[in-house]
Image (spheres, rainbow over the protein chains, first blue to last red):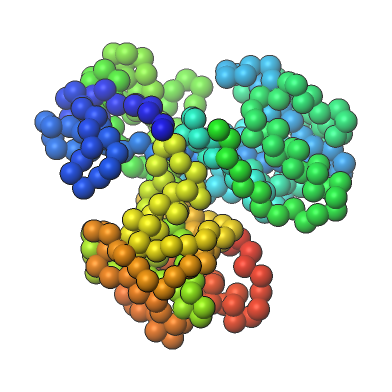
Length: 182
Length: 182
């Protein structure tokens, strides 16, 4: 069971919190006796794209931790007030400076140990030129045989790429793929 | 723009936080000068099911706020350490005591004003008998013409039901439906 405990103090009043199971609940929650508040912790969403130009896919080499120097699809944390699709577009612009047309949601993966859901949309690149932001060392296109499989930043990136090349090779429709990453 | 600000005090050290834009960022974040931590706020996921028995769908009448007494599909907040599918199964068990076989993800809706993503899976009921938990006043099956449209608890429930009946009427495949709720 996931036991990450983010709260030591109450974000509402600043008193120390205690983790215990509330009366009508079955999980330990950060509970504040000073102001009688309960603070829940939930998985967060990472949204991104798989941008395609002809036979090639776009990858970005990370200029930030974690996984500095490794290759990733453009992706990042979904922000309050934005849709998953808009977040994926924003991250593609911020990390790669790529112009895309967003296509349907393609992968949804539960990264259980870190409490994250990763959602990737397919995307059609409108141009093969990029303008990477400060979080990216380099953005470039790869044919399938060129993909640096041993230097990919995250397992959800690998699964999304593997699934894409497999669907394409088999001529399958690009249906939504859901998976759990333990 | 979404301006919900959850943190008054630092959950890490208990000092008062200030909302400001960090150096390498473009959004105001809860920033603690005492321990140099930054606290991010992100949308959270609500997961549920659309359980079907022949021509009928299962709805639950809420025994809790918000929307006490209104009808909903079984759904609730995704917990840390569980997949979206497992969360949807758990909520269906907790709220309806229904035995189901989970089917593919059916709707993904961004509820922008409250910072939530609602995800509903289709589900095949294995039995027409239910055992609702304490959050539910009543769980029962409805034919399309019986659905209490004016007494539904949430707009994402209405959209999911409308889409389902429309797909069924038109003989369309039940493809993933994505939408934004402003």
